[in-house]
Image 1 (cartoon, rainbow over the protein chains, first blue to last red):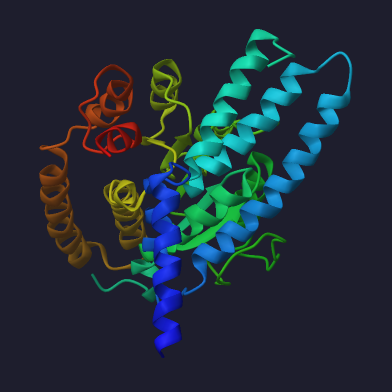
Image 2: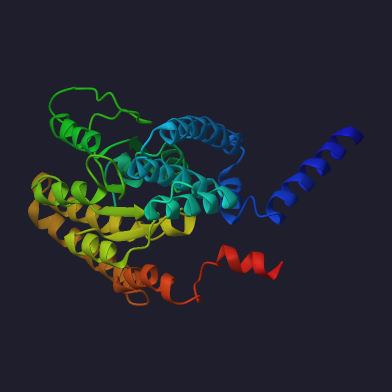
Length: 112
Length: 220
């Protein structure tokens, strides 16, 4: 029982630091609030979906980045999806990076 | 009210190409006690809506995820993403409003981008509300009046068709007054123009009911 509460504390601290460091924002709390006894794994399910979906998107993006010349429209479209998903789960930092990436796309900035 | 058992469980059709958003909106709607069907495109949405137009007489089973199978699968509200490949939410909205059988179903548009021109265009085309993503539980409270309004219209029609005119006319009148009163109470503090303005003002003023993420970070 002692170990259990220790683990709980650790998880709570990790969670808090994700917020403090700006990785997560309030939307994540919204997700947590949607979880209840009838749906105890909601957050886990969503995040798992997110990882799988993101991995797929990142692979597509990497492929697109290998092409020459760069198809900025395609990249922008991938980023739009990625940004949308990240925003929906509260992935604040990723969302910001996506926004930055899209700026580069719109400017046709391949170096960025 | 004395109607069928399905009356208090409204059915929402949610359309979004993003799997995360579909999962989120599904959970949000279920939490608010709606029945939900999700589809990933406008064309699938139309297919679903077209299919159970016939469903009342035939028994065609749609190959789309739904959490319930009723004989009469009515859709009481459609909520759709704006940015989708192929048919956008706006295109879908137009098609629905152009259809004589579907145009009475209230439609709500969601978007991750706050573009005032886009918002006004959707509202002008007949969308009831425009939600900014990510959608929250509190946003869903704005759905109720639209669903109730549409359903009470249906109820009125059915009553005239099915039951004795004289008796039911009195009953449905009373019902209407109540609905109107409730509806007015809900409307007067927040005229529908407000939802449009709210979304547009987000860009202009930092003063919002929803706390800004950057504000929270700044305080820390």
